[in-house]
Length: 288
Image 1 (tube, rainbow, N blue to C red):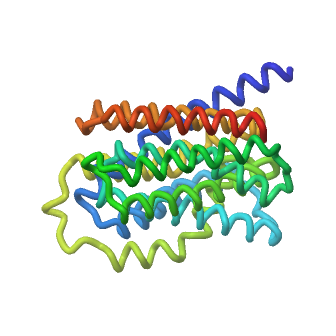
Image 2 (cartoon, one colour; image 1 turned 90 degrees about the vertical axis):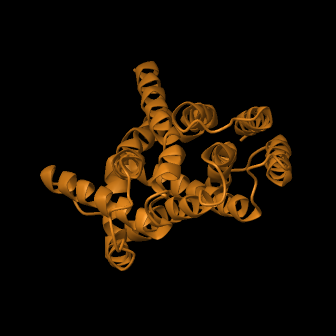
Image 3 (cartoon, rainbow, N blue to C red; image 1 turned 45 degrees about the horizontal axis):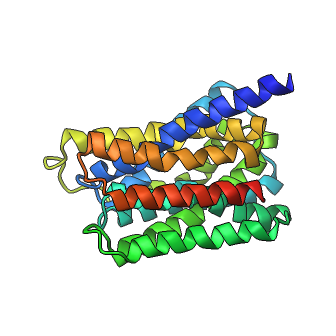
């Protein structure tokens, strides 16, 4: 039974990673028709309405008061922080360039697992962590034709907040369930996201093309809700440390999508940097 559970965890986690891999390319397309603030708030509102409907349909018990702080952290990390910062970053850089930073997401999650869970990784963990960070910094500062200091700094901040939201949500999902965690976090953010959506409402819809609408639909339904169903379930069943390593595949999936769907140039330097970061994260997680 343990083997079957582990296999189910890996399967759910892989589906989550594949879904998340389309987030940055979809966001890149969506910011071509919507402002970053409206996109962030609209995707949260749409996903929250879906989550509320499912919570009501399945008659889920409300979280306790002690869960509210953790749910707020999840909301800040993955509902508001990561979507907003990546949307702002993608106004300055290509999605292919931004995907390299996703290679640091498992490391960010691991660090917050240490801070929140009291784990004590071996010294080799920090060696590979520093090497991976140095690789990303070197790539960001290189002149590859798509670099932007503003965009790169926004991506770093997005990765930090997302790692925090992943670590907090993964721990909480063991008690509440994966889709319940993201649903309650979305509901908690709704009083903030609705006014932001209203205030940033586009003055006209005539300039919004079909690709932007498709991008908004994807990040609202799949990136903000469906992906978390599989991802948090995978972490809860298969283990955070083991299943979390699947995030190493996300940059490769994302680069492939950026090249195939958006026809963005994928330089060899991007592939090399991504491969090195993934290798560093792999060994860092082994020594976690």
